[in-house]
Image (cartoon, helix red, strand yellow):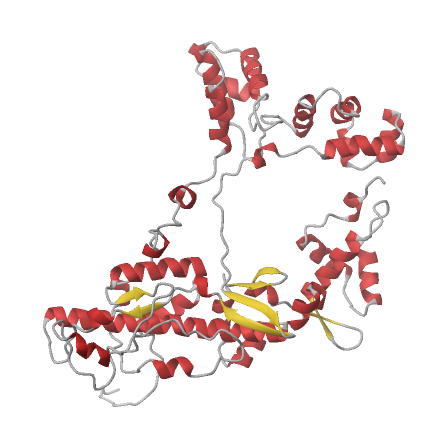
Length: 504
């Protein structure tokens, strides 16, 4: 085939840097967004944060037809209008399409390399407005690990150098649950033979470590863990001797809930055995979990839902949304006809600042639309709870707001809604459906709530099986298979009926 040049016209979607930035901001959580804004404030001199109670003029530094402004002519700054993120729609009623776009000009460059200005790593420095509330220890410190907690107690205990070496080795072998993972023989083999350490010495040091806090630490199995905790209880504790005997000799029967065999072997009546079991259940089978070593995770709601005059109102969390504007003073230094390097840099910074503000406004407009539709669809949940949750999928919201499902997925990820019933991630309101006998649909969230309610009200001596729960749901018009009930029960963290059986 002979090569030739052909001119064609076509349309294609181009992911501009501005569009990429808008998408990236859309999927950030509130905390990540605040860090992104802080980084933008530090890297772009044209951006500034609006402080509480501060009033700005209504000038537009990039308005069409604006005259060239200089530092020596501050009066001409009146021709500039700030781009301020302070008038975000607060309720369902005052959200109007196109409101944001009317406030932001469209004449913006699309060839700016945003990745050269805004890095992906978020800044952890505090903002200037939060200096009084900034606590370095609270924001940067991590929880105390179990090993460091044990070593702290070890440093307060008088020991010989050899015993201290053994103790440190034993502490290193304790897992996060508080149990000794290695056997004493394996620990002995790990030492240098020249140290002349014997097994009895390791066991003696282990007994000393087992007296540390939390109670039951460094146990080799559950039996020893419970026994250690019982030994540290006051001698006058009711049913202490019986509980120690049960933990030492009949723990397997207790795990199998063979109460009749326990009563026969321990020669106890039903009420007496119940009190002994209650004492054992008051112990902690995982003592190491009491020492928190992970950093706390904070959740800041993006949307606040409240009821006013029998209507559910949706508003953005203004405290979590920093209000930004273009610095009018710096914007006044930009000259339209000047092509110098300094003026070009300031003009680019100005355009980037306005695009950043526009991306923030677009993010919150989309978030507001999605949250409004979710509240409109799940009014029953807000009024009556989980059992009134309706089936909802991403396609329903995408069709209602005129957006793609992928956009709805980004909006609902790591975004939280504060309601009178608690704080929920937006994805919580989405669930699959199950058909009812009347031809309707029931949300899987509502079914889980019903199962949880049935289990809470069951007879502890005769807990409901999965088949029985499925039958009870069918009487309410909900057709659910037994295996589906088992799946929902496991997702709720509810044990099978054989493990839920209790003594009354």
